[in-house]
Image (tube, rainbow, N blue to C red; front, top):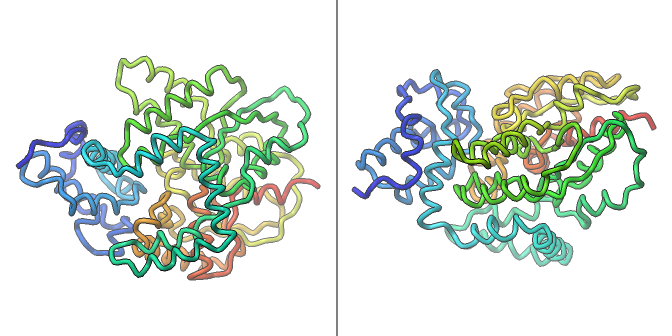
Length: 419
């Protein structure tokens, strides 16, 4: 067999912690759909051990199974030794990327994401195509064998606004200066697809007495990391460390749960002894996710919101960043709002960034289960704190029901602000 691929060996010790107990099967959303051992952590780890021992090749079949992992860490939550399968899967994806990364991955991760002007141009082009109806031709793509239906559904699944968040924030009236200042990190999902969420976040933070400065950041790097482009992710992290250096304020706030978790994980991108690791650690200590920050300093005098609301836990926020109680505390603090807990609230919705675009059928099977649980609550509103989850749940409401309104937590809180 071929030599062990690069980077897989870096997680060898973690690989061999698996005792084959199978507890990971109980919570893996993909295993629940397929019933196949190749879909669950135990199967991934066993085959990657075979790769390390040169008994198995790191071939396209294994790559396909690894690409179907949601990276939700449900398996880690059930694993007695606490194996972080997501890191092992990322290392394996990196081994593939190092040898045969698709050209369009490099274009997105190395050229577009580090360049906000280029990103705006790309998204504006997509907006114009959607407005003119040309993207409806994408439905014909479903007829091409081997092409995932998710690409054809992209225009329905992903909102494309006419104006982006940074332009909207620049047009806002200048807020009164206050003694308490924070920096706002605008994630790509909020900036380019859901700018109304960022506006609501600003309203809530300002109502809580904070002066907010918009950071001149680029993408946090999580998309590149998730696809195994560790060099691209590291470059984006370094760029953000440079761009945010010297910015004051009590904290760096983001309203994207995925951004929050990855920004806090920046130190892991750099080796021990690397001076960049120390910078990354100092930066990570300043990161606060919106709900955890606002729960500690909420706006006062909230008005009633007469609605039945439930809450979906984004995987990166609940399992990577361990923020679960704060969003619920904020919702329960709103007068006359009836909060109902969502069954399996921390189960992945199947969004996982762009997962639905490349694994549409698996994503929809996971989403259908989530929408069934939402229906069981009788909620009128589903709140969450991740733009990918918002897009996925809104799509789920269209194709599976129920007819619920899907909002970011900041949007629910904005409705409770005194007028």
